[in-house]
Length: 382
Image 1 (cartoon, one colour):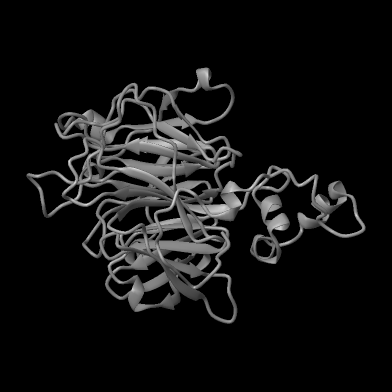
Image 2: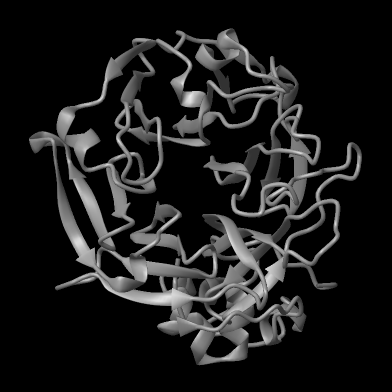
Protein backbone atom coordinates (compact mmCIF):
# COMPACT_ATOMS: atom_id res chain seq x y z
CA UNK A 1 0.00 0.00 0.00
CA UNK A 2 1.50 3.30 -1.09
CA UNK A 3 0.88 6.60 0.67
CA UNK A 4 0.82 10.15 -0.63
CA UNK A 5 1.35 11.97 2.66
CA UNK A 6 2.09 11.27 6.27
CA UNK A 7 -1.25 12.58 7.50
CA UNK A 8 -4.28 11.80 5.35
CA UNK A 9 -7.44 13.70 6.18
CA UNK A 10 -10.61 11.68 5.83
CA UNK A 11 -12.70 12.91 2.89
CA UNK A 12 -15.94 11.19 2.10
CA UNK A 13 -15.76 11.63 -1.65
CA UNK A 14 -17.11 9.18 -4.19
CA UNK A 15 -15.93 11.13 -7.22
CA UNK A 16 -12.23 10.49 -6.73
CA UNK A 17 -10.83 13.53 -8.56
CA UNK A 18 -9.07 13.41 -11.91
CA UNK A 19 -8.15 9.74 -11.68
CA UNK A 20 -11.81 8.74 -11.50
CA UNK A 21 -13.42 10.90 -14.15
CA UNK A 22 -10.82 10.92 -16.92
CA UNK A 23 -10.93 8.30 -19.66
CA UNK A 24 -8.52 5.39 -19.40
CA UNK A 25 -7.92 5.37 -23.16
CA UNK A 26 -4.23 6.21 -23.36
CA UNK A 27 -3.86 5.22 -27.02
CA UNK A 28 -4.35 8.84 -28.10
CA UNK A 29 -1.61 10.15 -25.80
CA UNK A 30 2.12 9.53 -25.89
CA UNK A 31 3.27 8.04 -22.61
CA UNK A 32 7.02 8.08 -23.33
CA UNK A 33 8.32 10.20 -26.24
CA UNK A 34 9.87 8.08 -28.97
CA UNK A 35 8.13 4.85 -27.93
CA UNK A 36 4.79 3.36 -29.01
CA UNK A 37 2.35 3.16 -26.13
CA UNK A 38 2.42 -0.63 -25.90
CA UNK A 39 6.13 -0.40 -25.02
CA UNK A 40 5.39 2.61 -22.84
CA UNK A 41 2.97 0.53 -20.82
CA UNK A 42 5.64 -2.14 -20.31
CA UNK A 43 8.17 0.46 -19.14
CA UNK A 44 5.74 2.05 -16.70
CA UNK A 45 4.99 -1.27 -15.00
CA UNK A 46 8.27 -0.92 -13.10
CA UNK A 47 7.51 2.63 -11.89
CA UNK A 48 6.14 3.05 -8.37
CA UNK A 49 2.44 4.01 -8.07
CA UNK A 50 3.38 7.18 -6.17
CA UNK A 51 5.51 8.41 -9.06
CA UNK A 52 2.93 7.45 -11.69
CA UNK A 53 0.31 9.43 -9.80
CA UNK A 54 2.51 12.52 -9.44
CA UNK A 55 4.21 12.99 -12.83
CA UNK A 56 1.35 13.65 -15.26
CA UNK A 57 -2.31 12.89 -15.99
CA UNK A 58 -1.46 10.41 -18.75
CA UNK A 59 0.64 8.31 -16.39
CA UNK A 60 -2.03 8.63 -13.71
CA UNK A 61 -4.63 7.20 -16.06
CA UNK A 62 -2.34 4.25 -16.77
CA UNK A 63 -2.05 3.68 -13.03
CA UNK A 64 -5.83 3.23 -12.78
CA UNK A 65 -6.18 1.26 -15.98
CA UNK A 66 -6.13 -2.47 -16.66
CA UNK A 67 -2.57 -2.27 -18.00
CA UNK A 68 -1.00 -2.29 -14.53
CA UNK A 69 -1.45 -4.69 -11.65
CA UNK A 70 -3.79 -2.96 -9.16
CA UNK A 71 -2.03 -1.28 -6.25
CA UNK A 72 -3.40 -1.66 -2.74
CA UNK A 73 -6.03 0.33 -0.85
CA UNK A 74 -7.41 0.36 2.66
CA UNK A 75 -10.87 -1.17 3.02
CA UNK A 76 -12.96 -0.41 6.09
CA UNK A 77 -16.30 -1.19 7.65
CA UNK A 78 -17.67 2.00 9.14
CA UNK A 79 -20.28 2.57 11.79
CA UNK A 80 -22.35 5.74 11.30
CA UNK A 81 -23.14 8.06 14.22
CA UNK A 82 -25.31 6.60 17.02
CA UNK A 83 -28.10 8.97 15.94
CA UNK A 84 -28.50 7.05 12.68
CA UNK A 85 -31.70 5.00 12.47
CA UNK A 86 -30.56 2.81 9.59
CA UNK A 87 -31.47 -0.87 9.88
CA UNK A 88 -28.05 -1.76 8.55
CA UNK A 89 -25.66 0.16 10.78
CA UNK A 90 -22.57 -0.61 8.70
CA UNK A 91 -21.16 1.10 5.61
CA UNK A 92 -18.31 -0.14 3.39
CA UNK A 93 -15.61 2.24 2.12
CA UNK A 94 -12.13 2.11 0.64
CA UNK A 95 -9.31 4.65 0.67
CA UNK A 96 -7.18 5.43 -2.38
CA UNK A 97 -3.91 6.29 -0.59
CA UNK A 98 -2.53 8.21 -3.57
CA UNK A 99 -5.40 10.66 -4.01
CA UNK A 100 -6.27 10.53 -0.28
CA UNK A 101 -9.89 9.93 -1.24
CA UNK A 102 -12.52 7.68 0.33
CA UNK A 103 -14.81 5.73 -2.02
CA UNK A 104 -17.98 3.80 -1.11
CA UNK A 105 -18.13 0.17 -2.12
CA UNK A 106 -21.07 -1.03 -4.21
CA UNK A 107 -24.07 -1.93 -2.09
CA UNK A 108 -24.22 -5.54 -0.86
CA UNK A 109 -26.99 -7.79 -2.23
CA UNK A 110 -30.49 -6.80 -1.11
CA UNK A 111 -31.85 -10.34 -1.11
CA UNK A 112 -31.59 -11.37 1.61
CA UNK A 113 -31.19 -7.93 3.22
CA UNK A 114 -28.06 -7.45 5.30
CA UNK A 115 -28.73 -6.41 8.91
CA UNK A 116 -25.53 -5.87 10.87
CA UNK A 117 -25.62 -4.27 14.28
CA UNK A 118 -22.62 -2.55 15.85
CA UNK A 119 -24.49 -0.92 18.73
CA UNK A 120 -27.70 -1.85 20.48
CA UNK A 121 -29.88 0.59 22.46
CA UNK A 122 -29.87 -1.81 25.42
CA UNK A 123 -26.06 -2.04 25.51
CA UNK A 124 -24.80 1.49 25.02
CA UNK A 125 -21.45 0.80 26.69
CA UNK A 126 -20.49 -2.17 24.51
CA UNK A 127 -20.11 -2.62 20.79
CA UNK A 128 -21.19 -5.83 19.11
CA UNK A 129 -18.48 -7.51 17.00
CA UNK A 130 -18.61 -7.84 13.23
CA UNK A 131 -16.04 -10.35 12.01
CA UNK A 132 -14.31 -10.08 8.64
CA UNK A 133 -11.32 -11.68 6.90
CA UNK A 134 -9.05 -11.07 3.94
CA UNK A 135 -8.71 -14.30 1.94
CA UNK A 136 -7.31 -14.66 -1.60
CA UNK A 137 -7.75 -10.92 -2.23
CA UNK A 138 -11.40 -11.05 -1.18
CA UNK A 139 -13.06 -9.25 1.71
CA UNK A 140 -15.04 -11.94 3.54
CA UNK A 141 -17.80 -10.99 5.97
CA UNK A 142 -18.11 -13.90 8.41
CA UNK A 143 -20.27 -13.08 11.41
CA UNK A 144 -22.36 -10.40 13.05
CA UNK A 145 -25.45 -9.81 15.18
CA UNK A 146 -28.94 -8.53 14.38
CA UNK A 147 -31.26 -6.43 16.57
CA UNK A 148 -32.85 -9.71 17.71
CA UNK A 149 -29.47 -10.99 18.95
CA UNK A 150 -29.28 -13.79 16.42
CA UNK A 151 -26.55 -14.49 13.82
CA UNK A 152 -26.75 -11.94 11.01
CA UNK A 153 -25.41 -14.24 8.30
CA UNK A 154 -26.47 -17.67 7.15
CA UNK A 155 -23.40 -17.88 4.87
CA UNK A 156 -20.27 -15.78 4.26
CA UNK A 157 -20.59 -12.66 2.13
CA UNK A 158 -17.62 -11.89 -0.15
CA UNK A 159 -16.50 -8.78 -2.01
CA UNK A 160 -14.01 -8.97 -4.90
CA UNK A 161 -12.43 -5.52 -5.40
CA UNK A 162 -11.08 -6.06 -8.91
CA UNK A 163 -14.54 -6.84 -10.28
CA UNK A 164 -16.47 -4.73 -7.72
CA UNK A 165 -18.85 -7.62 -7.06
CA UNK A 166 -20.49 -9.13 -3.98
CA UNK A 167 -21.44 -12.79 -3.76
CA UNK A 168 -22.15 -15.46 -1.16
CA UNK A 169 -20.08 -18.38 0.02
CA UNK A 170 -21.36 -21.81 1.13
CA UNK A 171 -24.13 -21.91 3.78
CA UNK A 172 -22.90 -22.33 7.34
CA UNK A 173 -23.61 -25.68 8.92
CA UNK A 174 -24.74 -23.66 11.94
CA UNK A 175 -24.97 -19.84 11.66
CA UNK A 176 -23.13 -18.28 14.59
CA UNK A 177 -21.61 -15.16 16.11
CA UNK A 178 -18.98 -14.48 18.79
CA UNK A 179 -16.81 -17.08 17.08
CA UNK A 180 -13.16 -17.59 16.14
CA UNK A 181 -12.43 -16.86 12.48
CA UNK A 182 -9.19 -17.06 10.53
CA UNK A 183 -7.49 -18.39 7.44
CA UNK A 184 -4.40 -20.25 6.31
CA UNK A 185 -3.68 -19.77 2.62
CA UNK A 186 -7.00 -19.88 0.79
CA UNK A 187 -8.74 -21.95 3.48
CA UNK A 188 -11.15 -20.30 5.93
CA UNK A 189 -11.60 -21.65 9.46
CA UNK A 190 -14.57 -21.11 11.76
CA UNK A 191 -14.58 -22.27 15.36
CA UNK A 192 -16.69 -22.00 18.51
CA UNK A 193 -19.23 -19.19 18.92
CA UNK A 194 -22.95 -19.21 19.64
CA UNK A 195 -26.06 -19.34 17.50
CA UNK A 196 -29.38 -17.96 18.67
CA UNK A 197 -28.59 -19.62 22.02
CA UNK A 198 -25.52 -21.17 23.59
CA UNK A 199 -24.91 -24.78 22.66
CA UNK A 200 -21.93 -26.73 23.96
CA UNK A 201 -21.45 -28.71 20.76
CA UNK A 202 -21.37 -25.50 18.68
CA UNK A 203 -19.00 -23.82 21.15
CA UNK A 204 -16.51 -26.68 20.72
CA UNK A 205 -16.91 -27.18 16.97
CA UNK A 206 -14.40 -26.37 14.23
CA UNK A 207 -15.01 -26.25 10.45
CA UNK A 208 -13.10 -25.26 7.33
CA UNK A 209 -13.98 -24.02 3.84
CA UNK A 210 -11.49 -24.19 0.99
CA UNK A 211 -11.90 -21.23 -1.39
CA UNK A 212 -10.72 -23.21 -4.41
CA UNK A 213 -12.42 -24.47 -7.54
CA UNK A 214 -15.94 -23.66 -8.65
CA UNK A 215 -18.14 -21.81 -6.18
CA UNK A 216 -20.91 -24.40 -6.49
CA UNK A 217 -18.50 -26.95 -5.01
CA UNK A 218 -17.64 -24.87 -1.97
CA UNK A 219 -18.62 -26.44 1.35
CA UNK A 220 -17.84 -26.53 5.06
CA UNK A 221 -15.99 -29.56 6.42
CA UNK A 222 -15.87 -30.66 10.02
CA UNK A 223 -12.47 -30.53 11.77
CA UNK A 224 -11.12 -31.56 15.18
CA UNK A 225 -13.20 -30.08 18.00
CA UNK A 226 -11.89 -27.65 20.61
CA UNK A 227 -11.24 -28.93 24.14
CA UNK A 228 -14.01 -26.76 25.61
CA UNK A 229 -16.29 -23.83 24.80
CA UNK A 230 -14.28 -20.99 26.32
CA UNK A 231 -13.62 -19.40 22.94
CA UNK A 232 -17.30 -18.51 22.54
CA UNK A 233 -16.98 -15.64 25.03
CA UNK A 234 -15.64 -13.10 22.53
CA UNK A 235 -15.11 -12.61 18.82
CA UNK A 236 -11.66 -14.13 18.43
CA UNK A 237 -8.90 -13.54 15.86
CA UNK A 238 -7.47 -16.85 14.64
CA UNK A 239 -4.13 -15.71 13.23
CA UNK A 240 -2.59 -17.83 10.47
CA UNK A 241 1.11 -18.45 11.15
CA UNK A 242 3.36 -20.96 9.38
CA UNK A 243 0.63 -23.51 8.75
CA UNK A 244 -1.09 -23.04 12.09
CA UNK A 245 -3.90 -20.94 13.58
CA UNK A 246 -3.04 -19.10 16.79
CA UNK A 247 -5.71 -17.59 19.03
CA UNK A 248 -6.39 -16.47 22.58
CA UNK A 249 -9.67 -16.64 24.46
CA UNK A 250 -9.90 -13.03 25.73
CA UNK A 251 -8.89 -9.70 24.24
CA UNK A 252 -6.55 -7.16 25.87
CA UNK A 253 -4.38 -7.63 28.95
CA UNK A 254 -6.71 -9.93 30.88
CA UNK A 255 -5.56 -13.48 31.81
CA UNK A 256 -6.30 -15.76 28.89
CA UNK A 257 -5.94 -19.19 27.38
CA UNK A 258 -4.01 -19.67 24.17
CA UNK A 259 -4.44 -22.51 21.68
CA UNK A 260 -2.84 -23.38 18.37
CA UNK A 261 -4.45 -25.45 15.62
CA UNK A 262 -2.14 -27.40 13.31
CA UNK A 263 -4.07 -27.42 10.03
CA UNK A 264 -2.12 -30.30 8.47
CA UNK A 265 -2.28 -32.56 11.52
CA UNK A 266 -5.87 -31.47 12.31
CA UNK A 267 -5.12 -31.17 16.01
CA UNK A 268 -5.05 -28.60 18.79
CA UNK A 269 -1.96 -27.69 20.81
CA UNK A 270 -1.20 -25.40 23.74
CA UNK A 271 0.13 -22.01 22.71
CA UNK A 272 3.87 -21.55 23.44
CA UNK A 273 4.42 -19.85 26.79
CA UNK A 274 6.27 -16.84 25.41
CA UNK A 275 3.73 -16.25 22.65
CA UNK A 276 0.85 -16.28 25.14
CA UNK A 277 2.64 -14.01 27.63
CA UNK A 278 3.10 -11.24 25.07
CA UNK A 279 -0.35 -11.43 23.44
CA UNK A 280 -1.62 -8.22 25.08
CA UNK A 281 -3.82 -6.74 22.39
CA UNK A 282 -5.05 -7.19 18.83
CA UNK A 283 -2.91 -9.34 16.53
CA UNK A 284 -2.34 -9.87 12.81
CA UNK A 285 0.04 -11.74 10.55
CA UNK A 286 2.18 -10.55 7.65
CA UNK A 287 2.08 -13.16 4.86
CA UNK A 288 1.52 -15.81 7.56
CA UNK A 289 5.24 -15.56 8.41
CA UNK A 290 5.34 -12.85 11.09
CA UNK A 291 2.85 -12.13 13.88
CA UNK A 292 2.41 -8.58 15.13
CA UNK A 293 0.65 -7.63 18.36
CA UNK A 294 -0.05 -4.16 19.74
CA UNK A 295 0.15 -3.81 23.52
CA UNK A 296 -2.92 -1.65 23.89
CA UNK A 297 -1.79 -0.24 27.26
CA UNK A 298 1.85 0.61 26.48
CA UNK A 299 1.30 1.50 22.84
CA UNK A 300 4.03 -0.81 21.54
CA UNK A 301 3.96 -2.76 18.29
CA UNK A 302 5.68 -6.10 18.92
CA UNK A 303 6.89 -8.82 16.56
CA UNK A 304 6.93 -12.48 17.56
CA UNK A 305 10.32 -14.21 17.27
CA UNK A 306 9.44 -17.84 16.68
CA UNK A 307 12.90 -19.30 17.28
CA UNK A 308 13.20 -17.72 20.75
CA UNK A 309 9.49 -17.80 21.70
CA UNK A 310 9.57 -14.13 22.62
CA UNK A 311 8.37 -10.74 21.41
CA UNK A 312 10.52 -7.92 20.08
CA UNK A 313 9.38 -4.29 20.10
CA UNK A 314 9.24 -2.71 16.63
CA UNK A 315 8.15 0.75 17.74
CA UNK A 316 6.45 2.48 20.66
CA UNK A 317 4.04 5.32 20.00
CA UNK A 318 1.31 7.00 22.07
CA UNK A 319 -0.86 6.86 18.95
CA UNK A 320 -1.02 3.06 19.34
CA UNK A 321 -2.53 3.11 22.82
CA UNK A 322 -6.06 1.78 22.94
CA UNK A 323 -5.54 -0.33 19.81
CA UNK A 324 -8.60 -2.37 18.86
CA UNK A 325 -7.73 -4.12 15.61
CA UNK A 326 -4.88 -4.37 13.15
CA UNK A 327 -4.05 -5.73 9.74
CA UNK A 328 -0.61 -6.38 8.24
CA UNK A 329 0.26 -6.57 4.56
CA UNK A 330 2.89 -5.35 2.08
CA UNK A 331 5.20 -4.01 4.76
CA UNK A 332 2.52 -1.95 6.51
CA UNK A 333 0.70 -2.56 9.79
CA UNK A 334 -2.57 -0.59 10.04
CA UNK A 335 -4.04 -0.24 13.53
CA UNK A 336 -7.54 0.92 14.47
CA UNK A 337 -7.33 3.09 17.61
CA UNK A 338 -9.36 5.42 19.84
CA UNK A 339 -12.70 3.64 19.53
CA UNK A 340 -12.39 3.55 15.75
CA UNK A 341 -11.77 7.28 15.41
CA UNK A 342 -8.43 6.92 13.62
CA UNK A 343 -6.16 4.52 11.79
CA UNK A 344 -2.46 4.47 12.65
CA UNK A 345 -0.19 3.15 9.89
CA UNK A 346 3.26 1.76 10.68
CA UNK A 347 5.76 1.11 7.88
CA UNK A 348 7.64 -1.77 9.52
CA UNK A 349 10.17 -2.13 6.69
CA UNK A 350 11.31 1.49 6.77
CA UNK A 351 14.93 1.94 7.83
CA UNK A 352 16.55 2.72 10.14
CA UNK A 353 13.32 2.87 12.18
CA UNK A 354 9.67 2.19 11.41
CA UNK A 355 7.62 5.21 10.27
CA UNK A 356 4.22 6.12 11.71
CA UNK A 357 1.40 8.28 10.33
CA UNK A 358 -2.33 8.72 10.86
CA UNK A 359 -5.30 8.21 8.55
CA UNK A 360 -8.64 9.64 9.59
CA UNK A 361 -11.90 7.95 8.53
CA UNK A 362 -14.69 9.89 6.86
CA UNK A 363 -16.05 12.56 9.18
CA UNK A 364 -18.42 11.29 11.84
CA UNK A 365 -17.72 7.61 11.15
CA UNK A 366 -16.03 4.97 13.29
CA UNK A 367 -13.92 2.14 11.92
CA UNK A 368 -15.24 -1.31 12.82
CA UNK A 369 -12.89 -3.43 10.70
CA UNK A 370 -9.94 -2.78 8.39
CA UNK A 371 -8.27 -4.64 5.52
CA UNK A 372 -5.64 -4.15 2.80
CA UNK A 373 -6.72 -5.32 -0.66
CA UNK A 374 -6.12 -4.46 -4.33
CA UNK A 375 -7.83 -1.30 -5.52
CA UNK A 376 -11.32 -1.49 -6.90
CA UNK A 377 -11.67 -1.62 -10.66
CA UNK A 378 -12.47 1.63 -12.40
CA UNK A 379 -15.07 2.16 -15.10
CA UNK A 380 -15.48 5.16 -17.37
CA UNK A 381 -18.92 5.79 -15.94
CA UNK A 382 -17.46 6.14 -12.45
